[in-house]
Amino acid sequence: MAKATMTFPPDFRWGTATAAYQVEGNNTNSDWYLWEQEEGRILEGDKSGLASDWWQNAEADLDAAAAMGNNAHRLSLEWSRIEPEPSVFDNDALARYRRILQAMHDRGIEPMVTLHHFSNPIWLTEKGDFNSRLVVDYFQRFTAKVVETLGDLIPKWVTINEPMVYVVIRYLVGSFPAPQQMGLAAAVQATRNLLRCHAAAYQTIKARYPQAEVGVAKNTPILLPKSNNFLGRWWVKRANWVYNEVWWEMLVDGRFRWPFGRGQVEGLAGSFDFIGVNYYTRLYLKFPPRGKLWEDDWGPDAVVSDGNYGEVYPQGLFQAIKAVLKYDKPIYITENGLPDKDDRLRPSFLITHLREIWRAISFCYPVMGYYHWSLVDNFEWDRGWTQRFGLIELNTETQERKLRQSGQLYGEICRSGSISSDMAQRYAPELIKTLFPGESPLAKS
Ligand code: IFM
Picture 1: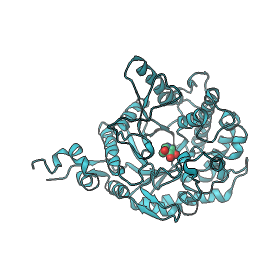
Picture 2: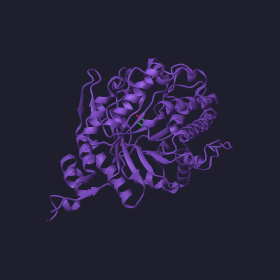
Picture 3: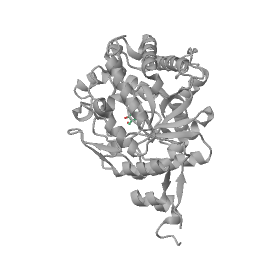
Picture 4: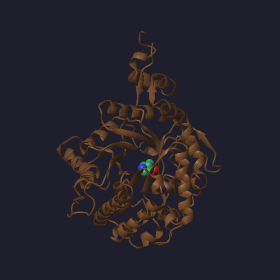
C-alpha cells in the first residue's frame, strides 16, 4: 500500500531561526550583557559567554542547516556590535555579517534578517531607549547603515521581533534589562516608539530596495479564559485585541491606539509586506488577573515542555494563521519550537505543528515558510541555558554539537518537502493512530 504523505509546495521556505545575542557570544556592548552580570537576573546565574560561538563559526551550523535541506534561515544583527558608540560603526563587524550572509547564499539558504531582537546598545539605554523619541532617529540611522552595507544580500527583513513581548516583559514584568522608566505609561510610550522605529526602518529599506519583503515577527499566543464565564470571555477578548490584534491594525491604518492614546504615526500605514507569526503555546487568563498576567498550570492532561515553558498545542498554530488571514498578506511562521533538552517531545511537535501548516496551505491560506526555533541550543535570555530549543544539541563547555533525532527528522522533511507516515512511524509512532489511522498496524489492509 502507498504510504500516506503530506506534501508541501515546491517553493516553500524550510528554515530555522536564531537571534544574534543568543548565538554569537561575547556581545559585551549590549544591555543584556550588563544585565547578565547582575546577581539573580539569569536563572542559575548562567552567562551567555561564547553562546553558540557564531561570531567565530556560524558557518559550522549553516553547514548543518544546508545538510538538513534548509533553504532559509532567520537571523538577527546585533545593533550594539555594529554601532558600539553612537554613530561609530564597526566596519569589521559589518564585514563579518557580510561573510555570514554570503555563507548562507553560498549554501542555498535565503536570509531573513531581523534588525531588533530584544537587545540594545548600552549607550541607547543610557539615552532613554524606547521611552525616548530619540530612538527613532537612532534606529533609522542604524537601519540605513545596514541597508547600505548589507542590503544587497538581504531579500527578507523583520524590523522588530516580538514587540509585545518586549514591551510587556521589559516595561511591565521586569525580567528583561530594566529601562530607566517602567510601568504602563512607559510601556505605551515604548510601543509608540517601536511603531515609529518600524515605520522608519520599513521606509528606509523600501526606498533603496523596493523588492525587499519587510515585516514584523509577532508573538501570537492563543488566549483562553481560565473560567468560561461572561467576565472571563470579555477579558480574553480585550487582552487578545491589545496583545495580538491591534499591532497589525495599527500597521494597516497607521493610527496609534495601544491600548489608548491617539495620533497618526508617520510612514506606518500599510508598512508591511508579510505577517510573521511566532507561535509557541496557548495561555489561560484569569479575571481579575491579580498580579499574574497568565496562569501557568496547564491542566492535568496537558503535554508541557521543559521548565513549564508552555503547553504543546498544535491546533493553536492553525488558529493563529487563521486570525491573520484578514490582512491579506503572505504569512511566514517566523518562530515555532519548544525547550526539550532530551528531545522527548520535539519529533512529534514538529510533525503535528507542520501538519497544521499543511492543513492551512490545503485551504489555500498563504503560508509561505516555516522557521523552526531553533537551529542550535542557544542562550535563552533570563532562563539562560536551562532551556534548550535546538535541533542541534550544544555542549557549552566544549562547543561540540550533536544533531538531535528531531534534527534528523526535520532534515527528512525539508529534503523531501513532505511528511510521510513512514517518518511518523520511525520518529513519533504514537502519532500514527491519530494522524495516519489507515496505516496503524491495527488497521486492516
Ligand atoms: O528565544 C526566544 C526568542 O528570542 C524569541 N521568541 C521566543 C524564543 C523562545 O523563548
